[in-house]
Length: 263
Ligand SMILES: [Fe+2]
Image 1 (cartoon, rainbow, N blue to C red):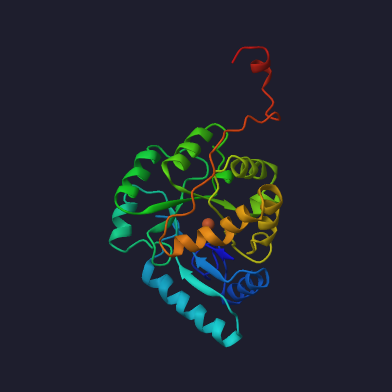
Image 2 (image 1 turned 90 degrees about the vertical axis):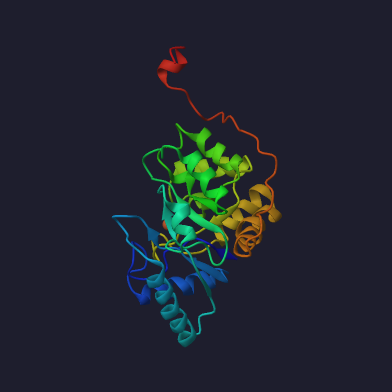
């Protein structure tokens, strides 16, 4: 399996604290069946001021440690790139990293605020020849009120990444509900771990893969953990999604005012 989102690089964000933790995370990933993992530290101005040369150097250090410790895991350079107006410009001048040598990159929206102008921003980025991979929409606190925006981004062609832990319930019922809904609506392109450590947010895709296989079939599960991530690394288009259909869940209870017909 290919995991395109992780914070396995040590000492540069809220992921692995030191090289020992990076190695422990790598061992867990390998044991779970991961062959390739993208190192995608945060690029968030004012919070995590990472840069491409520094992460390239850290990846080389970790690769040497893998050789010494016999860890058979391929590292791919990337970044968890927080939304910013100058993303296209910085991708083209090399100051922000894409995933490997592709034109795809992880695109992280703010967790608690709807990003204004995100459709226009994505259109501009795509016109510049890059492809956003929207990270974990199912965990955003604004998804309930703005699900149409997530759907519009999906329909624009933005690649949608769901977190493995959301599917298995690690992030709670809410993220699980939204991940299931997006899976059932045919909106998910890839599953990634977004691993940060070895305990609360460990690497590994197999449990989520199994849940998806039961829900949507083996082929769909393989598509999300292997085929599509591989297409991304080869800079090929991801597989077309099935026809999307919006689900109106029965369980969505209306509030008191709505039941009384006031909203
Ligand atoms: Fe992340």
